[in-house]
Length: 319
View 1: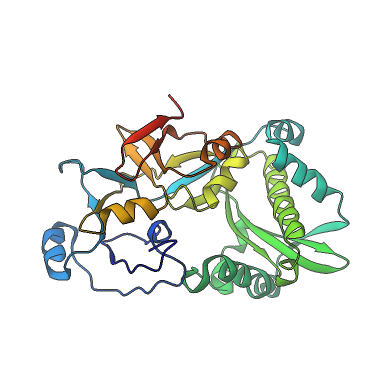
View 2: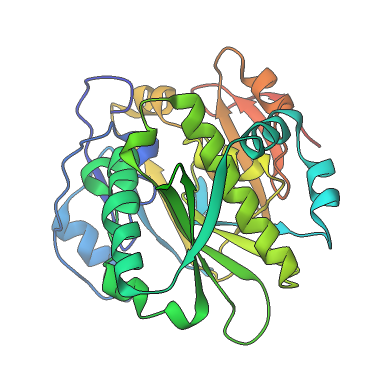
């Protein structure tokens, strides 16, 4: 279980395991138990047994369970016509990071060849993903990425002739918003956390600037797990992204049962829930959470509430 050494059995029926970090410490063990047809869910649960936490597909005609969550969240960032307007809307700490990074002696160049894609993949993307997600990182191949080169921008940031990072931006097939696909940093950057933060902000800045220059009204910053405390959601929100549930009606029921229920609720990270077609974020009580929320904007999230380990609302933070 997260933040403890207590063992926890979690079964996900049909999910992409995006919720694992809400319950489990990094390095958890997982096993594929089998497959089943959606309408055979009851038989599957009987076959594979129960667990402390069970996540299963929720169909609209079923009785509403205690907790309903979206499969994932999307972060959509509206873009103004010019970078000047974009910079004005940024919160102070993000704006300062970008301004500091822009003072660096860096340059940008665009990669087009398969060798460029392999360099980004092997030297920046894979090390970055493994540092962040460990053995559970989802690793695409350089060849698959290069197959979309016709509708991609692969942009590198360099200093003193050395490429230190890059991002992959996908252009819409017909019209619409650009899609932020991949970002990677060279391991040489990791030793200096402040430099790493600045370069990361600089890559995001370049990506937004390029999207504005090409006339895109918005950029999709990609999907995130419906977990409020994993850092990814906070970072994307800090740029002003709108946080919305996945467009499909793919929803899951989250069941926490058994003798470990109180302990699970006390230690799990907060998840984003669906509540009468609105998003509600229940936050476990912890020191400093209100101050953290004041420093961030969570556009699209409604009914943010502090709850105790029994899921009783202690305080509403938004109307």
